[in-house]
Length: 360
Length: 196
Image 1 (cartoon, rainbow over the protein chains, first blue to last red):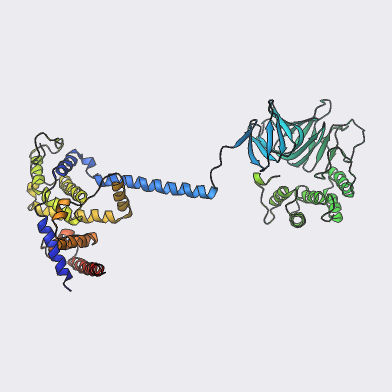
Image 2 (cartoon, each protein chain N blue to C red; image 1 turned 135 degrees about the horizontal axis):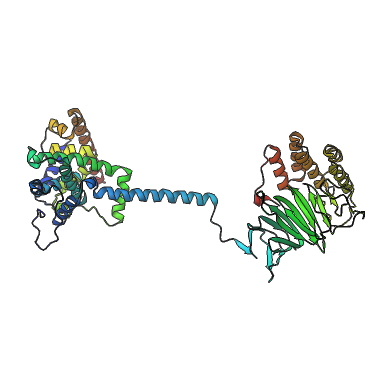
């Protein structure tokens, strides 16, 4: 195969033909200039390393771009500027949200629901349809409707976040509760943490609520019959309570209405036992009754039992078993987020603390 | 000290050498004027007729001489010294070009308008066989390319090549054999393509 010889001949021909080639004038000047300008410290630097430096920068920029792109794909497209309602940031909203803002900063949820957040106030409100609220100084006033309040834990010495209602104010130190307000009456139900209800009538003493407890207003004078509740005062309440506490949580009954369902009688008995600190008996009562799915108030009773097992008795085995049963019976249900939170507290398998989005 | 070139007096003159300023500088200047074209041609040869490569190689070779601290007069055969330096620096430069960073660097150079065009003067004058041979040479790995040039064009023996590149004679022999095999393969591929 004569190819190697051909190559040699071709190469020699190329060499002969380029024998007369001289370094161009411009190149001669450039090289000489680079040689003369090179100080001893710069001798190692040539044009090629400069290009390399740029190439390295380009490679780094490409890598950074790839990381940013991957992060963008992972996190989804950047959200647009958050919607605001009278100084509140709307962190979540249903598709059918229709909210108006009055001249005095009154926010009225006409339809749908949303989560309003205000870092200066220190928490968020999940407001539902027909809820009307507005900022009053450093507090939030619920004029009507229902809102779930979620306040981040306050550092020691920090002022409490305050929710104003017709019957007084609720001072919050880091907790989650539901407020319902209608025509001068209302109810607060505490889910977690601790709140203090300060009656509008300053002659009445403040009332501390424990998780699972509810409080209705307007407050009635001492000795007046309590509608739908039969709790006894706890150590934190005044000797002559002007306030009625109950654990009729989540029964769905409008504030102030009498309890007519059989399940309410059970819950009232449980409330008495709870107020006496007889949590085990309360749990046994609830476990014995075991209202079936479809029974009005069954979900509330089930949640009540789980809540006692989780927060008062701290019984991990029974608590986890109960929450599993509860989820099977009621699925997502009204207390889905609370159930997951309780499971997380007990360390049940699959129990995770709900994120802000999952909270009711 | 002026640029050792035949450029018109009105042309821009580079600044003089900072050091050394004595007679050694003049001798370096003379050396540059005498050998730059030869080194530039070697650069064209090793770089596949790329002018930018040849220019950079010329700079590197004379910079190496400058940094070596050797007096030009002390070197017995300055031509051979420069030739050897050019061969070694060409291998290094060609190797760096083949790296990922080198490819990026060349891409960047093209993107910023610093083209590495082949010398049109040479390319126009090359006959078809010579052009084919030049392309085949350019396809060889750096060390094979330099070894083939030294063997075929400079008529160097394997021992001389080994000494110049600081490798063993056996390595030179292997490099030449591989280059030969590769050239023949390229030729065969070109022949097939031509027939098709």
